[in-house]
Image (cartoon, rainbow over all chains, first blue to last red; front, top):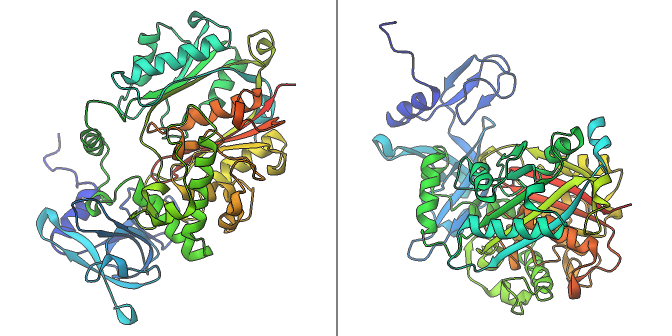
Length: 128
Length: 391
């Protein structure tokens, strides 16, 4: 039996990075495309050669909704397309959920600390 | 298209259908009303439960649900299908059931579902929380999407952004479904409904109000399939299965490439090709309308209109009673019945229409029906079947 533990899976690696304040996605060394959510192999070309990459953090709101449940403040849920070409669920903060628009340019940041760390977005440029 | 699918066309038939506990089945369990619907379907066919040697079923709570059903019904099937891809299951089950029948693996398949989600004494919230724990979604759950509504709401928002679809057009879908429900004694929501009422209801998941969302009801549905040569000797006029195809593309809304295009483009194209038919050949359509946008998306993806034109297609009562394309003639998930997974109910309604048993809501001269199931969050799995009056 080996004395060293195997490296943790990509979910745990992603979470560890996030908890240290750094948002990362994967970059395929064969086809050059970016990957999110983290995978064990590239869903585009089957390569297992995926390396972590710090994205620019810039993205565009692809779609959005506001959830208005009784007894709760309404909140935004969005799908954001990063400039690297991957989509993720997130929320746009810093503006009312009524003001979030499809096509709005946004920038990622890591909100919260420890296990509460989460990627969120704020409007930038003309969208702000 | 595989030659196998062509060979299946018309080789199996649906010979029995049944429903039970639709609406509010207080004091009953999932298994009890499932069993009632199964019994009704088997006896509708002129068979006995002991004749059933194939089973297809799934539900959202039990990982081994076919075993619960086998034991409860007292059957020992040689073919068991329990694949759960959401509410499109039961329609997707038709193809493996047809394979099992034509290969001789079994002689009579019972497809069945039942849920008392509305009246169950165990809270829905607790069940939902338990399901989330068992099937984690670490890249979406932290943002608290209200599933399944949030995903479909974002599909609707994107469709509106890209094609100019309006809330009034979404409301047309809800009002059409209610119009059919008013003609169906089994439907749960039968009060008159106007477009203005839908538009004035509070928005809860932008752009949806509660009237854009399916019902939360109890209900069970079942149907029985046999080989077409045997179908001729049973109690009801058989309904032939011309084709069935399933497509699965993703699991989460963030995994969906284009929120305005569902896997129905794949399942629909395959089903039409295998049946040798086109949308204009279809007399009556049953689409899984979990939300108003579903009906619009599926009319586009299945080829009843071009992409982006679904909103204008449904205007002026086009899919309502008296409209040019009778759609969801039982009232659908929006106004008839929606106990978590709706697929089997769409099949039952299509069969009843093709038999001419639908009373006030009967589509005159209906000979061919398209049944389309939606599953997963959102629209992750799609299954299309084309059915025809036998012969």
